[in-house]
Image (cartoon, rainbow, N blue to C red):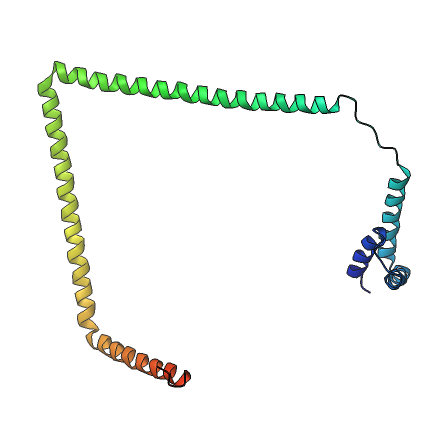
Length: 188
């Protein structure tokens, strides 16, 4: 018996789950192994202390009431914290709404007082967006031309290599199909 097995046997010994043969094996191992013998002695001392201390303290008469009061108090604190979080969220929502109304209102006020300025700013914004979109289209067009040019150059340079690779691929596929048919006994 090795030390790992003896650990299992020691626990089973205290659970009173060992037969006579297993007890004899455990005792023999404990005679030869100082470490396991020491652990067995420690466990035996612990179990002896537990068995001798049969007096368990009785809970107070109002123990259940105390526990229930504590649960109610914790639930109240949790609900209060949750309500506080909702309150803070509502305050932030109102603050953001007020800021939005003030900013939007000031823009609307300016537009009503100076409609020409609003039209000029709107025209300027549209021109900026148009220039941005035009530059984006030009950039995409240039990138596309560059990618197509590089691809065509590579294709021209390695044209024969692509042809050879294509032929090798077809031959390999044909051989693979024949091997699969031969492996299945020629079944179709």
